[in-house]
Length: 560
Image (cartoon, rainbow, N blue to C red; front, side, top):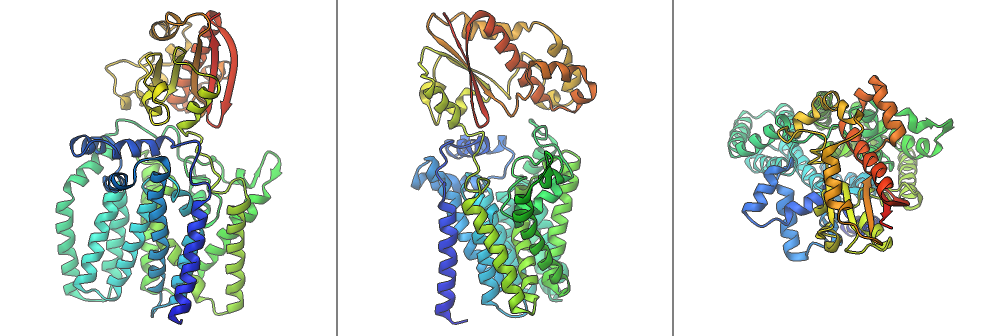
């Protein structure tokens, strides 16, 4: 392809990707929980507090270092923080171009452009290019690592081996379970590279050096996986449907398994007595096209395809097995490392089709469905609202005419979580919280969070059945009832995706042993606390109503 034409095509692809990622990038709901924690760690004082914060978290350190440098030069407004992921997202389009060029027996500009186009319009990548999390940078590093792997297999020089190992280290430093991807990637390279004994000895040697240097990271990973202080599995338990939603997330514009997918895959196809034509059209058809291309790639079973299969299947099955044992949640984003390889796999198969007309039809249908959905659908990745956004309850309180003399109790999140959006509310002596990290009205002070979540349903059922809770009564009297004066309001800020049971449903759940034992403890705890506070406050104060928006609900009481 002529150089001028190639540059023009790549420029157009970059512009499309850049514009798609700019749509609604400044989220009015603010950062949600994981984004907020990422920012909090990155802004900690360097070096002591910064590295201590990283050690308390479950994620690898590289992204926090990257974000800290970004904040040093460009500030920490929400928009600036989102642009840290946006920047990595744009670079990923370029890295996928060079990765695609390396496909096949000879350099192919066309394959490079197709890979870049796929990355440009990928709903998954667009979504994470707007989020203050690790995944946009992780995709970039993984794509560069895949390129180094392919180059090493084709030409196992010391230079290529060294770059392959260095990028592997960066992937592990970016993602806690990146070592799983690196393990299978290294095995694949050793198996399928050109047969050169010296190369393999050199690669193994440099890998051993890298492993020794990464011993502290290995200890960190071990503690994270086997000595968890806080379990997340309660909000996203494993279901077989996640295995299928993984593929629709990556190859269609429908993002289902970002936080928690429905327990049944077919519920998206047929639910509530209706056929979901939108899901069939915009999820199934792009997925079928992608799978068709992958199947075609299998007929050209060269070393690249072998690398794609062993690495991606190995990582996928490892995370799947770990999720069955409750060591990780099976979410699409946790398998980001293999996404560049899967794109390559599909593009390789697409390039193997002989009919130009057939390829034109497949490419046009796929691109049209993806772009139409992104630009028009209310479920577009650029329109998905982070229902946990920490700015939502702050905005709601201000709309409800909050005054500093009013009493506020936040449920589930500590009040400090809202400091970025309202210092006035978060720092007020009249604001208190009952957070997910400390609900001692239910559990013992001596009990760790891991002990609480293991068997907590059994141990705390009597607490849920009791008519009174002295600890909760003391908290409410100290922070609300004894302090509130005539004309002042009490706002109970409730996070509804956790406190899912009203009083009637809660009592029914307590009576149904099977349903009770299957319900995550935190759902029971915060449904109980919310119902208890509402019932007692209605007796002592005037109830003015309840307002809700996205994942938040605020109960309003007044002293008259």
